[in-house]
Length: 231
Image 1 (tube, one colour):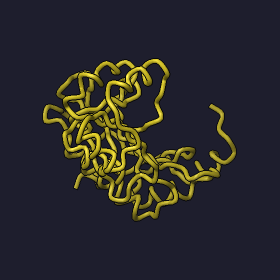
Image 2 (image 1 turned 90 degrees about the vertical axis):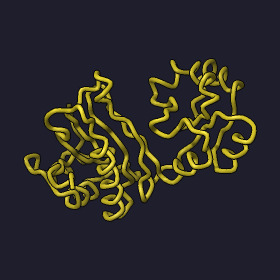
Image 3 (image 1 turned 120 degrees about the horizontal axis):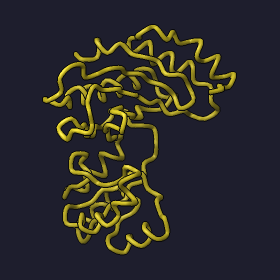
């Protein structure tokens, strides 16, 4: 794969054979970011889990202390008082049955997170084929199926992110923007890692964290010493 000049120069800042402390890794990621836009900083956590087994699936959510730096658009499926509460909490879109054709037939997907009250899951379930593959389906484990829509919306707006295994048993999660301070990124990263470490499946034998790296949108990955994370 041919890389651009900027990427090649940035990659020189990273020693592939070194496992860095999180503070050093974050400093390198910020320095290696050369794009003209405010790049997202992402953590990539390769686990020893086998997601094909239900008892080794990892899925949860955590509120990053400094948020993600991204404006998140929230859609809430609710009715009555709960719909009013969702709007009051700052949800961009609130509705019910009437949104189904808009999403299914018109391909409307101008939202980043979907929240639903339990009584609306029958309606939302009909959108499984559309929302499922995009990772937008509400889920109780992630706190997006709940009667407390006020808290759900406020948490999401405050920087709540969801983490889950992908098909290759890796977790990819944004932890902020390059414009964040090193301390903010370190706080967010450690909050995420604490949650992921706590979520280790009890049935897992062997190594849990195979490798952890962070990178900016356009920058090279920097590997982190996992031994120092499991405190």
